[in-house]
Image 1 (tube, each protein chain N blue to C red):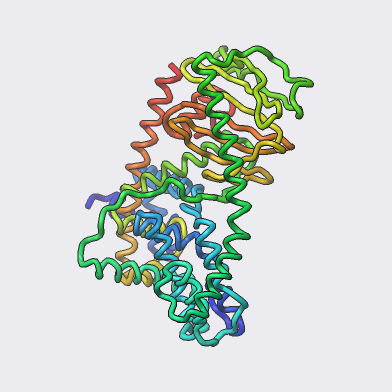
Image 2: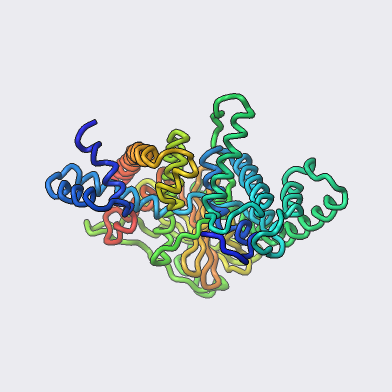
Length: 279
Length: 189
């Protein structure tokens, strides 16, 4: 064990505010004189920040959450006997064979059907509609890539049932745009006009399908909520798709950029003023 | 969270406050979605069944995590084999995240999601004892003493294992990050 290993545990304790007294004083004094341990402290702090940013690691699926919520039933006071009916309900939802009474089985089945029905049906419908929008965005993206969809207009004013404004390009400090608007056209989505906008980079194409939220739904996939917005991330046949709805409009951003998130975003933003957002 | 007399006990336990943490822990242990759901389900079944034996001063979170781990260990023993290596079934998992950022920039959020995936992949490459200690400390914010109680080991073991787990995780993430940056530069150039 070298000198830094000896301090590694104390550095973690220090980061976790669990170091006290003489050990704390000793570590602080050591950090003043040891550049390697200071670097180690910063690396550990950066790791902690990264991990904390990614909380929670996973989210329980809705059906599981619904089963457990259904089993919770009315609140019980401290000291009550074990809630056998809850056990039955949970076990029934998971393994039919473990229910012993036909009466409880029937009751539990009815409750589960009602709860799951109320919980899942609207979700399933929304997800199906969202999948349709994603499929259309991916199909349109591919059609454009295969030159089957010519780009013909640069303004959608009066042609789509919504208003929006998009940047045509974003210049980098070194003088040339990282990406540029390559074209746009109208496409049909559920009998409504939708807008297809494409951006071209040196090696990659990004397309943005924009539709009214009366016809298009953003749902499913990996979800991130921010304020009133929810972003949905999906992968379809090697293409990355992000969908979101705001101000009555639903968007689907499709790209074939490979690699990590940082990579995907830095392709456009690496030389720009907002690059720190992605680092 | 500690139980108090006259607390709505069932709601405390099954009120899904800890369900994300339990599901994450189960997924980290099993690396399989259906097994993880099964494990969480069984944890709640046992917890509800044992509510009457819970002391008022008990820490429900620690109690639930301990139940989950004990069930998992029992399942492993029943299989009479070493833990199976199962491909992690992450696709299709509802990973609603709930993370808030300071603005509504979709790119920043996109980064956040893919960053999370990168972290998940790195954690998935860790050995089981490293995966669980990272989860318990960094995601569930349990103290070393609480982790020691769940893992049934000395606090010193928690400290040293956590240090080794973090070092390994940092190395994995650094490698992934370097690869991403390098390939990003190649595309730009």
